[in-house]
Amino acid sequence: MVGLEYSSQNWHDKIKKCAGKFFYEAANLSAYEVKLRLNSANLREAFFQAVSNSSWANYGYLVAAEIDDKIDPELRLLSNLHGIGIILLDTENPTESQYIIESAERDIDWDTVDRIAKENADFMDYIICVKETIANGRIKKADWYIPPQAD
Image: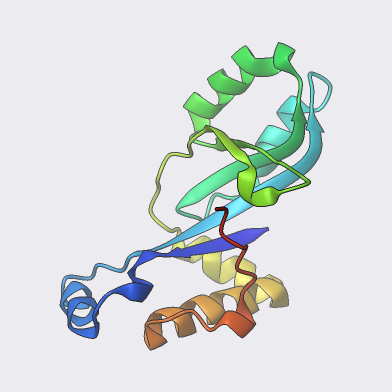
């Protein structure tokens, strides 16, 4: 699963243009590896899937609906080593999910983005939506799932 955080969407047009002159874009790309549960039997495999599948993105996360407390020390060690964030998914109310560990920020790896987009039409569609969002300066709601905001 992939995502876009576009924090400049509500900026004034003149501010967006000014920021663009400095090659600044308030958009971050994220990748999520989603599992039903994390436990000692699947932690390493799931974790390294998250590392591999998010190498191109600003942020990479491993997401699970259940996380066994016994794996917490190893989970934190792996997260610190590889910069992968951990999210405990609330399946009943996803907007209430908890960030257990924040992801480290990285630069986008455009060579990897190019390779994946050439191999995966869905990913190419995602990149096109990102490009159009940035070019238009706003999110076209028909192109994205935007979760309802929690009160």
